[in-house]
Length: 160
Image (cartoon, rainbow, N blue to C red):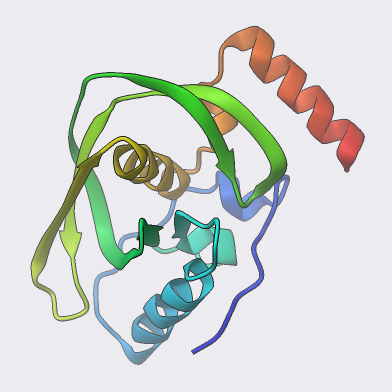
């Protein structure tokens, strides 16, 4: 449908928890199409609805050539640990080592209202946690160690 502009911090939509999608309307179908089109770009792993200015619980993903989406995702399981570089389309040009569970699983629905489960380790696990954080009004910088987070916020202020 359309490539949408990515919202960047300090846009308040990124800090606002998203509302559940209660009915699959034509607007929701357009939102999912836009999320899919916008994430389908090299270097993009995931994209939440609030990153394109829509305060609804949905995200799309593009991991190792596998494109998909989840409506009303809930993080239902995570285990193990990984500590590696993480970035965000809404926090351009800043990459920091971030601690996450290695494995994550989310449950949600598709456009037909069917339950879907998306799970994975490594990059997939990281993306699932990152995008559900977005839908709860959090950005990955919130998860950084205190001194690293302070440096990141200082860099952000000087860049904007």
